[in-house]
Image (tube, rainbow, N blue to C red; front, side, top):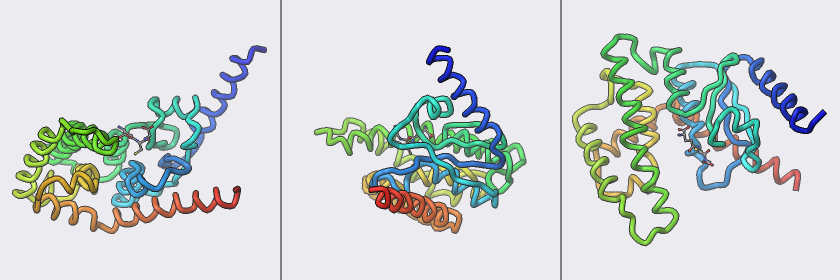
Length: 234
Ligand SMILES: N[C@@H](CCC(=O)N[C@@H](CS)C(=O)NCC(=O)O)C(=O)O
């Protein structure tokens, strides 16, 4: 029996085990360094579940060793991903829309409200995060000049105008689009670029929600428990 065959059997068994897991499971890393704590994107899924009152569990994949098993479920070796009674889904935006199908709290059911929620959810990912993440990455890697700053400022200025005119992005009330947009905008370095009072008020309003505060506290507890476990093993 070849090694490759044995590995494929082990992988198949693992996949079958995951498929057999019941309920909603948010997958994240078993541990991360201090820096990203409170910002790891599993918070988006935890937060959505909390808003919608959905029961969920949190399970982990190793941060240090992202093997074939992890790549089979998130092809970039990232987190989060979600399992839902054997359905597996990755990309935080896709996971959020999957959850939004379960609860009107996250996305209205009328066609106009739903369309607005979808468009702003994609805008958060594809018009804002597409700019904020590379800009932030250049900043933290100490590039001598960040050539993306004008692009970032332009996008942030457009959002400031939008948020100066409305309290919520879609359907006149909180939706999953606000959850995602606020999570994209709440990064400290992004907030420190220029003065945007409407955006600041929006971030404060959205992140003051009990569901966000619980999701963030739970994520911080999760990684604190991981530190404690590592200390015991040392
Ligand atoms: N587009 C992905 C991005 C996921 C992502 O950046 N995840 C981070 C944690 S918040 C990660 O796993 N970083 C480690 C890496 O990229 O290797 C999503 O929204 O799910």
